[in-house]
Amino acid sequence: MIADLFPMATLITPNLEEAGLLLGRELIGAADFQLAAKELLEMGPQAVLIKGGHLDKTHTQLTDFLMWRTIEDGLEVVQSKEFKHYRVNTANTHGTGCSLASAIATYLADGHDLPHSVAKAISYVEAGLEAGRFLSIGEGPGPLWHMHDFYKTALPDEEGKY
Image 1 (cartoon, one colour):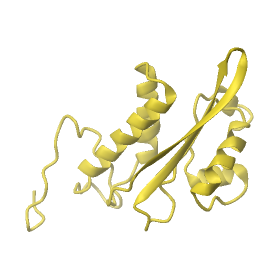
Image 2 (spheres, helix red, strand yellow):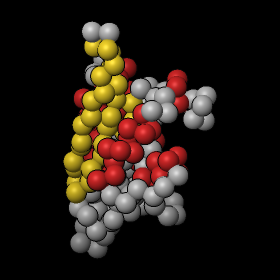
Image 3 (cartoon, rainbow, N blue to C red):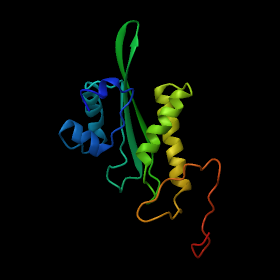
Image 4 (cartoon, one colour):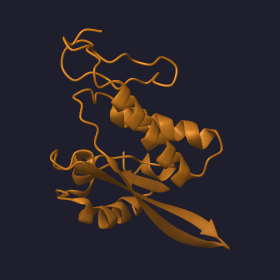
């Protein structure tokens, strides 16, 4: 995967566990993100977004870290940006990583630059998590509500019914 796919990747989006597995060490906190992103970037992708949602669940603020390379005046330039946002209090988190990556790809295809695409995608996923907080679909953690802009979810009444 690293040798064959990373050099072709525009962006990789590992969570903490995945980044640690790729690097062969545990990432403890947001302070590890910059060095980890640099090392992952050296494996070949054009950009790395380390997602911090798996950090200590008691933290209400999350940090995601983006590092990317561009060519300016014939020279490679590496840039980075931190994205701070709030954890949505919900068990319905199934598919958030895939949803985030897909949203980033969608915003890139729509012509937004990478940092703006990441920021918009984070907002989209946050809104989907918030809208899907009260959904009860299947067993275990449910999904975020992807259609939050089209079909608003109703809040439960005092008895928890919709």
